Length: 256
Length: 377
Image (tube, rainbow over all chains, first blue to last red; front, side, top):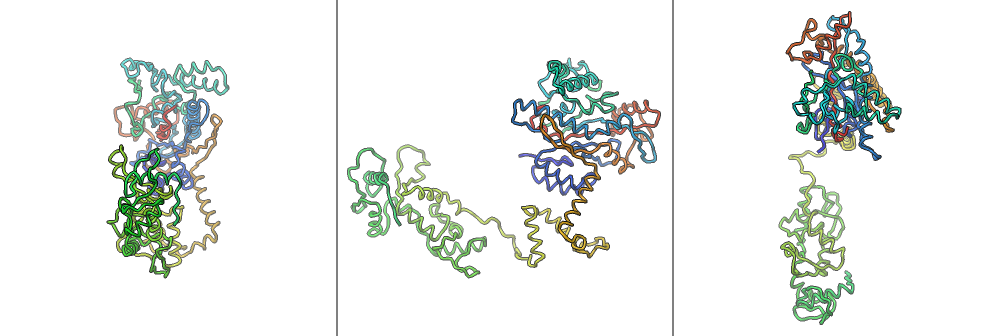
């Protein structure tokens, strides 16, 4: 049975999704619900055409954890075309990065220069930082612009080769370099956009196991700049780990 | 009734009749039949089946032998009782004899009536039919006069022996007999069962009937029970009868006093909805990727952060400690105690002369739909 997920709170329902949303909108989601938009999104979510991206402000220490939806990413499906799988993967990654950047444009800019806030009589210049990105394993690779599987470096935070992933040697594997990897991604993307130097593009992709996309969040301070937490921000939500034994796990230490 | 046989069927019947007495049939043979006649138990010989049947009904008071396995005619009294029973149970059957509206339907009408099994649970499966009256009578007569029992041949399992096999005069009759044997219509039961002490017809005014139509028709399928409850609570407020509700200047105003037309009503709704969407800062954008256009929706994260800070000012803490940044430690009570936050905080406060803080963000991507794509990234 297909399980429907509420786009607002993430609750799963085998059926009656719309009834849940209509009722919960009035109670739980009243703070961040807009009537016109939710009406269309409810319909969209039933058809599985969109999925949401939500953010939470960790400085909010109130007892109620509030996730606010900031974007809806269209589902990219495979088309009837030659190389449909590869083309769909490229489209999927491209759409995801573009939507993330569209939503975080101002936040990325302000993460470098800050903006003034006044809270409880205290004034300060605030710098937004993305500290954690909760997702599942396929989207982790998509958000970071890395290959999903069957690549030389399947670990996100280190450069352990696939032969040693899960082995003791992975503990001492070299940490993935944010600057170098993102530079290579940008160069490969520029080649791809101009349809030139295909061999170089493939070599760059194979070197870091990158997929050809550029992570939009790399432009955010703290991720693409010191302390370079781009490859340490991913956290798997336990609800998303449906088959933990099938995940490729690495024994490296991301905190190094 | 006119019963016609093809030459081939005639030949089969003759062969079958000769292979056993009493018009029993046998297996087909390529050899020519020695006696091309149908023979009755009493020795009467005829060439046509119709003549044999006429003889059997005239001199033997009906059929003999295996033909007596045909469905028996249901007593008329039983049929009347079953119809009465059906009316009492469902109340949704077609008009029948003695109906309250004065219309009278006789047994020869084509109107369907209640299945006979409702009033006669002991009826056999063979006697179960989709209708009584004329249709059932005609079908039964057809079967009696034309169906020929085929004795079980060698081979086949127990199921083959348990289900009698017949030859029919036409394929249409064969089809009807097949589905009559299933008895689906006879096993049917009323769609719903009345509630105990049901009160029918309480929507008995113009306004209440309009309300009933709305509840049953809105959205195509009407309202769910939960929505019906919500509607009742709304109407309670709309009527001004809800206990403890506030009153204002428009307490007794009607809908038309504010919205004189449907368009005014729809425009007002649309304006409020659009205002709410614009107020929340939602935008849409068409993204062309690989030659395919997709539409995405987003709003500025920074504006979201600002609104959260404004709305939840009391519970916002700017630094990892209540009075300022705290050093790295093993405390993990809130996300602000994490190393990532404190490292960013140290860097921010070291780089700027102005008092600075970090607004930590957690991003959650509900990407289970992506997983459904097979994770082919």
